[in-house]
Amino acid sequence: MTAMACNCGGRAPQWTPQPTVVYELKLPDGTVRRYVTHQEADAANKRAGSIGVITPVAQ
Image 1 (cartoon, rainbow, N blue to C red):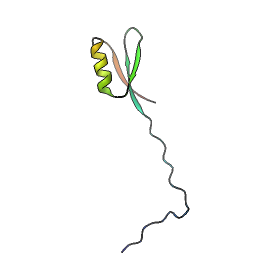
Image 2 (cartoon, rainbow, N blue to C red):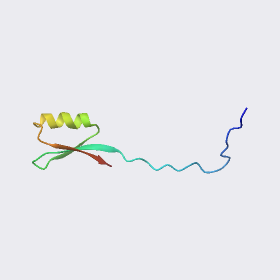
Image 3 (spheres, rainbow, N blue to C red):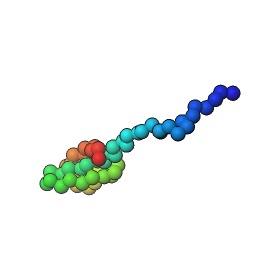
Image 4 (cartoon, rainbow, N blue to C red):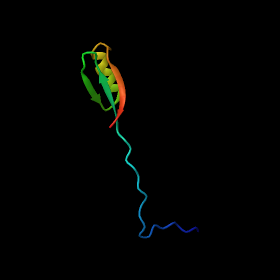
């Protein structure tokens, strides 16, 4: 049987939080909207006539 490593009173490793990615839809008239998923942004773009640009943005 092998011994388990112990972090007896030591500090836990610090993890840096990962940025959240949202999808930004920019329309030619200057409107900018943000969506949680690419599918939502794509659906909104299609409703607008597929004239916008979707860009992933880190928050």
